[in-house]
Image (cartoon, rainbow, N blue to C red):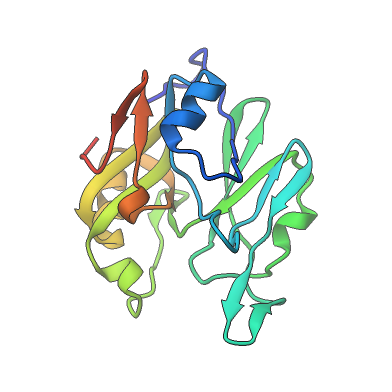
Length: 193
């Protein structure tokens, strides 16, 4: 937990060579880091850093990229303003983030909690219903930020845990085998935190 007004800034990093979370944390001098969104071969998530667009919401179909729709799970957006996080609920347009005025934007999801309400999740996706290692970032009402990894939960269970921890906003980040948290140079992977 990072309490409001703690002397920490948040930042997004991106490495096209797929550096590990530990390597990226070390390169940035970060005290804590977690894996975030899906930026592997097709970059299905939106990412803007320093005003430069590095990834866009790409919905792969048999025919290629669907230019109009975003992935069903990309319902959350993180914005960095002066080193502080802001949580937004995404529009359904694939290019919604293009209209945002912020320098640093990352889409992720699904949004698990918004304005203290656990959000409905699609029950027809194993990504939602099956237990996997999970990663999320949340915000409590007092402004504290939680970076959370957990072992083998479905997304409904994970939302319940985040709510129990006091989150009024929470976004699921990339999980499964890539679930990673680094704190003070030590890697925490798939453990309840």
